[in-house]
Length: 281
Image 1 (tube, one colour):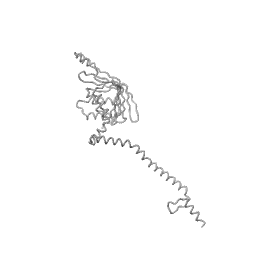
Image 2 (cartoon, one colour):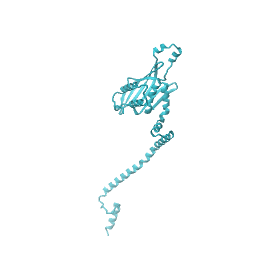
Image 3 (cartoon, one colour):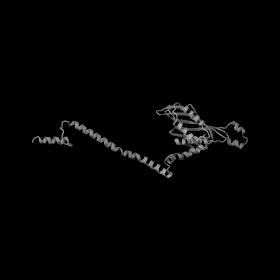
Image 4 (cartoon, helix red, strand yellow):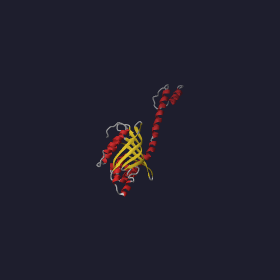
């Protein structure tokens, strides 16, 4: 379990940047899972919105795929990643803290051969849990534009016009590498399959049985609400019985002048009638 933490949300991003700088080439899945566990809630979601040549895009991934997203950035040729927040605004709620930064920067340093520095500008909205851990529950980065800066020293060393022409072309799309974009496209397929994969990992079922079990449970959840509604009338009948018993208690309190009878289940009306008819004899 992560170490308890309490501080400012923007400083929490500073710690996230420090943890990313500790990454190395030997960082495996366990390292990335520990990174996501430290900074993201178990039910966290990460959303990216941007506009490409073929129109606007929106990708949302769950907690299981968040460590793979950050790992895909480095596997796409990035050697350094950090976030810069300018003039963030904080708002406090009952159980969460929202950090809204209109001028957020995602800065990535790429490797050979051009060593470009890519600055991605956008709006970053983070929702933290208001507790000791202060982990991220929701991450939404809306990308507006990006810039790619190539060192002048690298350009000066190039004598081949074709190489200089290649340097003038972007290596990212809206600040994201093709590797990360392909990963996000795969997430559209992988995200609905997370339940199947987790069931296969937990119970060792084959894909067909996993699908059958998942569909059967989804069907049970779909038909569950009517069952719950049909279970309500017995509780209402019990309430009516309770009210009837209250009325009978009230009636018995009003008929205290009637003498008790030794026999059970005899109403006060017939008892009074029989007694009155037997007096003349």
